[in-house]
Image (tube, rainbow, N blue to C red):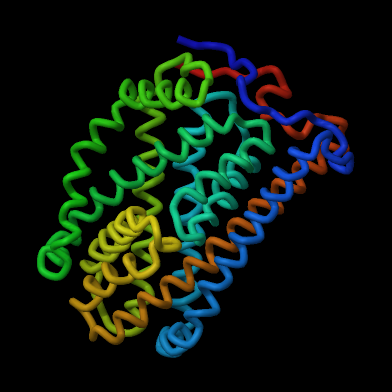
Amino acid sequence: MTTTARPEPADVPPTGDPAVPPASRRAALITTARWALIVLVLVAAGWQVVRQWTEVREALVSVHPLAAVLSFVCVILGLVAGTMSWQTLLDDLGPRVGIARGAQICLVGQLGKYVPGSVWAYLLQMEIGRRHGVARARVFATSLFAAGVGVVASLVLGLAALPVLAGEHRELLWLFALLPVGLVCLHPRVMTWLASAIFRLLRKPPLDHTLRVGVVGRSLGWALLSYLLFGVHLWLLANSLVDPGPEALLLCAGAIALGFTAGLFAVFLPSGVGVREAVLVAALATMMSVGSATGVAVASRLVFTVGDLTVAGLAALTAVVARRRMAAAGLPTDVPDELRQGTGSATA
């Protein structure tokens, strides 16, 4: 069935001149805290580059410049695919937000992963979403669902790295117990029930339609593509040192996918640092020395950090340009496009 999109019961901020000071001391404190969190996130992300620079420089000496550039492009494309996986779910949980706003919420918000404690990325995404007129509950549900879809995609590809884990990192084999649970949770009716439960918990009306199979399938497809591109990135770095052969491509994709999932559960480590590298070194050591594998893993971390900052910066710039154009046209800038145009719809 088809239902016409209606304004979200979101905590949509009032539109108006951003130069006008907040109406209350509490609002001023919230605004200051929000910007302080963004600065903290950017400093933490930059520190990850600085503190690893010596090891990274040594690794990059051995990596062919062309391989480094191509691997960086793969990371950028993989991050874009991951954002599309997130955006697909966001748009089905309510009125369409638009790529410019959605990318800013997802990509800038995910920089919170560089602060120890996985909660920061969710909080930052929720606050940025609120600034764009998207309910915190909707952003939170989207991020949780996207994480679940990502875990399922990573475990599917991670089956290619299972022999390596069985020999070197048996402590991570428990992750595969999440695969059947994740597949059940990806059923549209189960996801709809979970979304409504989250909304009720946050005192918002439940979802008014059932998530579609096609939406979940597209989100999973984008997530698989994202990890495959990340695998190509790792394979290109390895290929500049040894000849891993095309058969190693799936191993690289599976290893990096599992590395991300293992890092996701290392909540006290910024962006899963160390955990992801351990999985990558175990996989890469099957085709090169442990020292070389460590260098490639560290180089991969740098490429991802620079990639995260790059796409977040581009997303923020795109959103700023879009907001200025809408402001120049006399259009409200703090509500989703579908609500502003009054033409949105969601299909159940």
